[in-house]
Amino acid sequence: MTQTTVDPAEVAKFEAMAAEWWDLEGKFKPLHMMNPIRLKYITEQIAAEFGRDLDDDKPFAGLRILDIGCGGGLLCEPMARLGATIVGVDAAERNIPVAQAHARQSGLDIDYRWTTAETMAAAGEQFDVVLNMEVVEHVADPLAYLTACQQLLKQGGLHICSTINRNPKSFAVAILGAEYVMRWLPKGTHEWSKFITPDELYDLIRKGGLDPVDRKGFVFNPVLWTWSISDRDLSVNYVTASIKR
Image (tube, rainbow, N blue to C red; front, side, top):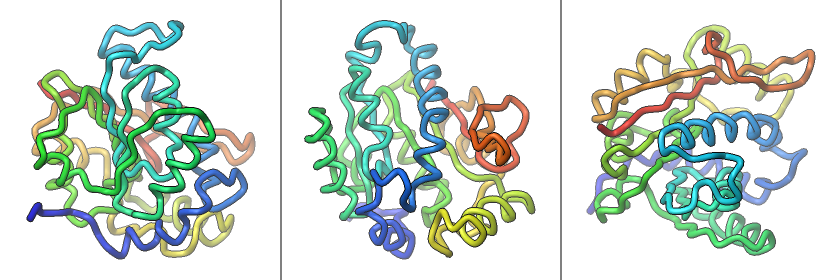
């Protein structure tokens, strides 16, 4: 049997919210607000790595992309529209029919599966790009999980991983602010002790067999109520890009 880094308690949290993935005012409102800058970072990294022009009609045609922890398909759908062959996987079984139904409504052909990174790696699946967004802080063994992500990449493949920094500010913003003050997320969605600093994540990525090449911050402005990408501010949400040499 394939080893798994899935944490059943973490999966249960997201199972409970599965029906709300596409509700712009629901529990995933923060993710919908953040999604445009996640997409901007992802698409620009893929275009740069694979020499694609984002002004083309289907710039990602011919690329096979895996989205781990796909949820309701918030990233899979735009990737499909850009021409990629996209596989979305999630350890929370209830997310999959929600994602499948929305893809059908949107007229998109997306391969959604209830499975894990480790199972897919053991089956020898290979991708040009692995998207690993806001997942690593929910797994039981981050190094084993990132190693599975590396195994899923073709040589020269691109791994994009975002997560939350671990410091007093992230506790105030991501837990107290998002879960207790704004009530954007159910209490207990995140565990501060499982957050990972940028240096720790770079170290884990290297130990997993990948070469980190970039990191940026995703910064929320509570006055303008907007998200932006920062070269310097990695204090709460941040994203990394790495290559399988």
